[in-house]
Amino acid sequence: MANLFNTLGIGYSGLSAAQVGINTTGQNISNAEVEGYSRQRVITSAATPLSTSVGNVGNGVQVQDIKRVFDNYVFSRYTSVSAQKEYSDFELQTLEELSSYFPEIDGVGIKADLAEYYDMWQTFADNPDNDAIKIALANQTQTLTAHIQDTQNQILTLQQEVNDQLSVNIDQVNEIAQQIADLNRSIDTAETAGMYEASDLRDKRNVLEKNLAQLIGADVNQGQIQSNIQIDSNSNTRTGSYSISVNGFNIVDGTSYHPLRIDNSSNEYGFYEVSYERQDGTLIPLEEKITSGKIGAILDLRGHAIDETTGMPTDGILQTTVADLDAFAKGLIETTNNLYAQSSTTSMQSNSMTLSATDPILSSNLNVNDGSFDIIIYDIDGNEVARRTIDVNVQTTMSGSAGTNSIEGQITQNQDDNDDLNANNDIDDYLQFNYQASATGDLRLELSMEASAKSQGYTFAIADNLTSDDFASGTNFAGALGLHRFLDGENARDIQLNSDLENNPTTIKAGYSTASGDNGVALDMVQQQFENYDFYVGQDTYNTTVYGMFDITATYVGISTNSATSYNETVTTQYNSTELEYNSISKVSIDEELTNLIKYQTSYGAAAKLITTVDQMMQTLLGIKQ
Image (cartoon, rainbow, N blue to C red):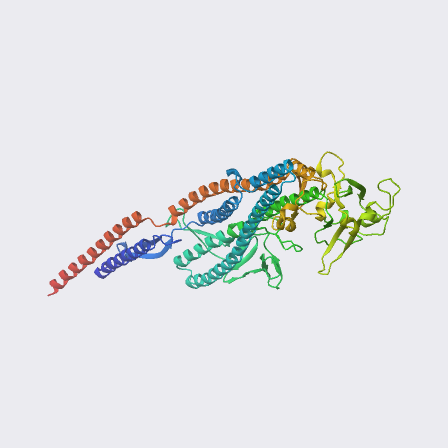
């Protein structure tokens, strides 16, 4: 039967429930600005009533649980778009930095230097014997090549910085994965009885899940979802098994985690490789499987796959830019040197080579084409005294006996080049051939004038036999081997003016021969800017001008940056919208909490009034007894 003590208990239960509500509201207000904190709500219900003769009499209120307001569906979208935004932000930041290396739109940069370089060749062609112009040409060449080198070095430095961030971020992924596994253990312990939800621990885990998604685009896989309609129509809780995966590879599995491996010890350039270690110890490469989050952006920029032969990435925006600029520089070097080999000299030495003396030249990695070139001998006055055609076909090798299908065999063959029945004034009488390793181990082709002919002022030159009006229709033999170089180097990292010409610019040649006023080479250099050549970038070939190849490089950077900007704007809009939706469900509203505080305060006061009333009733009863 209900009595005053029961009524007193009802009042006490009301006080307790109101106090729990005030405590929860205070917790919400205190954590309003804490990242990832979800507002909590008290779930109450009427206590089990007392069964009496007059019916069921109320027995007060009871607190069933304190649950957070959280929607897993919205949070899943929030983490997904967070990964996209982190990817986009890092990509855009890096590409904006890359774009600053190509200021062509402002009328400065490599392209402007290239135009001034060709203008200087035109000036040289107009004044072929002017030493001051030779010095000016050398200075402009050094300006151009230094700018190409600096730009490439900046790109490579940026690529290396991005690569270094890969290691830092993978370490952070492993650290977060371990923290989540530890939190899973704590959550399991706190929720063992299945009665109460570890809201604060779940909030901490959600923050780490979002961080992990931002880093590597990780996906959370958990059991069933239970609705919390008592709290909010959007609120629900995930229960059951728990794992986090990256493209199918679990890095967190319940209370255990599987760290990702990262290593660069076997790469001479320091490029990291990321792998997943299976239980049997087998390492599975992950670079090509990570496509989201900041690490996905890092790999898309740096390059995913690493070539085992070269040690360099085979893809990636930065690597593509490096390869494009290298192709531009290599094409400029080879085509320039091929033209400059037409200027006469007493000796020519190639770049260091790996081609075996008896291997076919066209089967090597040298950019030599099928065709022929002429070796021309000039006397001291610049008159042509001998000329011989050297054929290059699929069977031509570098060395061989006289008369064989080799460069050496064709040069040393005893034949009458001038049709004058004189056996002492032909190419084989003037020129010496040498193709063997030096004392330092470098294998180079050396062509030089015979000592007596050199002392009499004889010189020689190499000129391609073009099959059309295009400069690119020749063999490119001298350019590919680097004979009589105007430019040293092999790519954008080491392109520079030939060291001998840098030390003495007045030896730069404007003509084919030593004759005063000859400007043939200089005019060819001017024409070079309008000629189409093949530029090789990996498996791709671009047939364009020197200007065109640089435009391809700069345009690729510009298009990539513009695309990243547009994508970032779209993702940012999606992110802001999803974040707003997420915050509207889970984030603390101070106004709402203050309203709840007044509600609980009123409830507490009413419950206290009930207890006071019961106290007065008891005093009345005691007074009657007295």
